[in-house]
Image 1 (tube, rainbow, N blue to C red):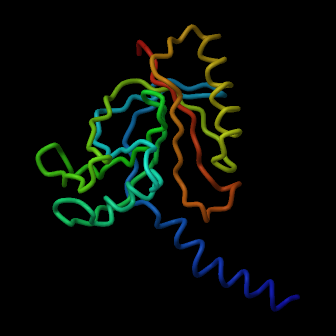
Image 2 (spheres, rainbow, N blue to C red):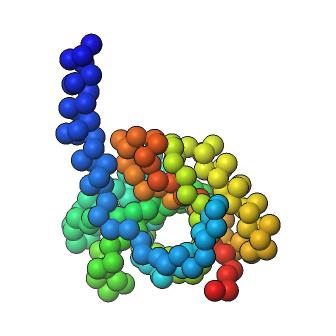
Length: 189
């Protein structure tokens, strides 16, 4: 039993922990402009992302991962960034990977697939509630409802559907995961 625990500890130390830490090397930049015990309001600038919607046999994550792995017109490998976001658009669940800040509309590689596209995520104010645990539908729904209730209570207008943001690999222990529920809002700083 003691040997088994040591082997599990060694496996986690050499395989799981490094993967969790090294999953992404750049996070979308923002400025916190207001904060309370439940949520914060962030100001984001415009940023480029690659996105796809659920259709066909390939998962959204796999399509986007293939794009950053070099399946693009430049065959360029692109560093993973955080967060990975999901939002409902036109009745479909859309997933987005933000692109590293070195890319702009002139130098970003074009996707090889027709169902993967480069988009500009419009900056602005976003209300965000942070939570740990699994990135399950239930956990997200619970926190987006808390956020929506608080925003309504504080008379802050919501101008987008709810956005799910995940920051960690699936190998990160649930209590160490960073997840967020977000809404774009009208906010006067």
